[in-house]
Image (cartoon, rainbow, N blue to C red; front, top):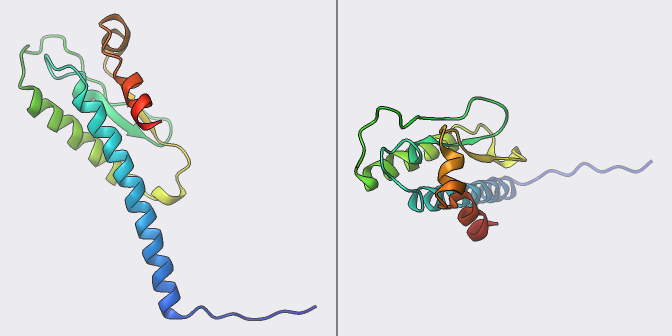
Length: 132
């Protein structure tokens, strides 16, 4: 049997590390882009829907807010910013993004289906069409 020991130089290790960081940054940028699309095309009245988006990497309770007894006519940009901040926080909590095989964008608002289908906003359809 033949064998050889190969030592990886420090500069090659550093390049590999940089490449890994770059791939992770690209993945984060894509997730942020998807998040920006989702919140920007979401309707805002009480803000419950747009702030109920979450990213998940497995089972768990999705973020979900009801619009019941919430004041209507909220500032759309403020609520969209809050929704985006929630999603960025979710992204930053993913422990090992490079080894994650599936990430799910969810909306746990009790009226999410109504927003998507009944009222015809098609937020998830738009996200899917733009980002695949």
